[in-house]
Image (cartoon, rainbow, N blue to C red; front, top):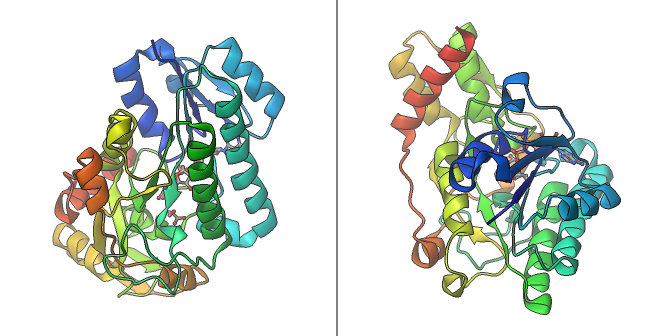
Length: 316
Ligand code: NAD
Ligand code: SER
C-alpha cells in the first residue's frame, strides 16, 4: 500500500494534485502538507499537517512516523518572486530538494519521488521553437539556475544511488482553483480574473510573447501518468519536456474576446518580460510521448471556456 506525502500541497498544483492522488490511493493515504494551513473544508478531506520542508528533523520524523512510500515535492519560489530574493530563493529551492533527495537515499521505504522542473531551465541560447529534450540549457534567472541544478542532482542521485526520482519540465500552468504563486506565466491566469471583474487587463508581457502553457487537469494527468509508468520505459533520468500548447497574450485575449466582446487589453511589460524572452516559445515533448504516452486534452478554446466558467463561479 502506498502512503504519499505531498509537500507544498496548498499551492497552485498541489491543491489539484492531492484530490486526484486521493482518488487513486485513498483519502487517508495522501498527506497534504505545507507552511500554510489548508482551508477549513479541505481539512475534512484527508490528513494534513503544517510541515516546513527545510526543517530536516521534523521531515524525517514525519516520513518515518507515517510510513511514507512516495513524496511529491512541490515547494519552491517561482520565477518572478525569485528575482526579488535571489539568494533566499536559491536556498529554499536547493535546500528543499537536497533534503528530499537525501531522505530518498537514506530511507529505503521511499520508493519513488516526484519533483517538478520547468521551462525555466532553458535560456536565451536555447533554440526557442520546439526546443528539444536535450539542448543548450543556460538559464539566466535564479529560478532557472535552481531548476537546472536540481535536474543535475536528480539524475546524479538516480544513477549513483539507484533511486527512482521522476520529473517534468512543466510549462506555464493555468487553473482557477488556487491562484498562481508568483511566476512569469501568471498573466495567463490573471487575465481571466480581470476580464470578468473589470472587463480590462494590463498585461505585464508584450502582446507577441509566445510561451508553452498547459491547463492544470492535463498537468495533473501527466504527473500521475509519469509517476505510474513502468520504470524500464523511462529513458530520461533528469526531467522530461512537456510542451502543452503555445500562445501569446494577444491570442488568449482574442479567445476571451469571443466570450466578452467589450474586453480590453493594454501592454505594460515589466521585469518579467526579460524572463519570458529568455524562455522557449514551444517545446518538443516527443520523448515523453514515446516513453510514457504523454497526451493533452485541453486546447486554447477549451481552456478559455473552462477558465471563464470557473472564475465566474468563484466570484458568484
Ligand atoms: P505555488 O507557489 O503555488 O505553491 C508552492 C507551495 O509551497 C505554497 O503553498 C507554499 O506555501 C509552499 N511552500 C513554500 N515554502 C515551503 C516550505 N519551506 N515548506 C513547505 N511548503 C512550502 O507553486 P506551484 O505553482 O504549485 O508549483 C509547484 C512546483 O511546480 C514548484 O516546484 C514550481 O517551480 C513548479 N512549476 C510550477 C509551474 C506553474 O506554472 N505553476 C510551472 C513550472 C514548474
Ligand atoms: N510558471 C512558472 C513560472 O513562471 C514556470 O516555471 O515561474
